[in-house]
Length: 160
Picture 1 (cartoon, rainbow, N blue to C red):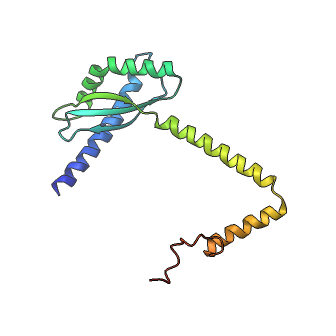
Picture 2: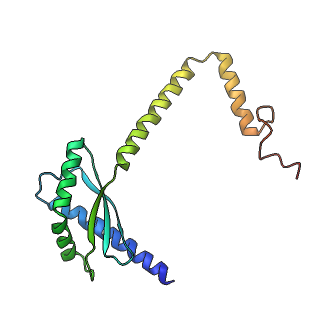
Picture 3: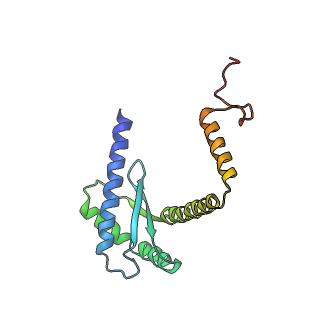
């Protein structure tokens, strides 16, 4: 039970740090921190002495590099502001880590759209015979027809 309570506290502290850092970033006067800089998540150590802050910057590489430098230079200010805003016994040391997951998800979304468009184009170019064969194949997969299976179907338990 004690571990679960600690886990809940860690998650609450992580969320509080994330929210406060987001607000502090908006108030910072450093021109290197773009409005498209956001805090993705925070991970604190169990003893709450260290905190990894994952941030994301939408834009080109120069904006990302500028934001990295600005966050590194402003670490002391950000930690001091956190100490003022949060009631923690000890304010954790902050380390900033770039997170490209948002850009990667946009990249994957674009790839999925390309694949979908290619599939739609292939469907338009199909002959009626090919469409019938495709429908028959899909129907057999739904029914578990052994004609289309290679015999390794998990639905066939007659041997057991």
